[in-house]
Length: 260
Image (cartoon, rainbow, N blue to C red; front, side):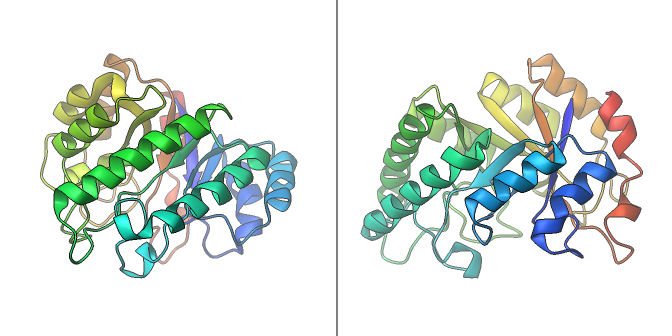
């Protein structure tokens, strides 16, 4: 399988503009960046071309989400802000050509019922899926564990499966983060089988600790086999926190994974 470096968590000892080449030198096949918008789209395109790496995934702008807020996608009163974020991301993606765009559900906003939030989220995911399909870009959506992120709207694989069924669009799939499933104590291989062909992108970190593979208790080999068994042969993105020794010293797992 192809391995991508999440540059929002790896190589953070370097400026963002230098992380792409660092990932290439380290042996990664591609990169993803949660929120790349500090770099002009043309500059990012040139950096990717110079390194010879594809941009695997970016997030759609999410308003105040990273500051602890509800975000945009599931807040009815922020529809205009979401539409602006969608247009910004479409323009950015037209130049940088990510393979996937992640639309974050966000947190349940004060004064909004869960069903109201889900109705907004479903409509916005469907709108995004249709818009990005014209660029050949896949839209994905993820579940995040409530221990690390209380209040997040979508936590479990069942939540995610039901959401995708409601969206009912071929260009909207699951972003499966193995760490977030393990953090909840779930049988991750069972989660993989449940989501099956709906899986459009995979991220990983060990658990507990969200460190590199081998720093926790997750047995990754059977999970990679489970992914292959459901027909997933696309990208695996390393989204973990290196320890104080830095990213380069955390990559002992990489070569074996690239051969898997």
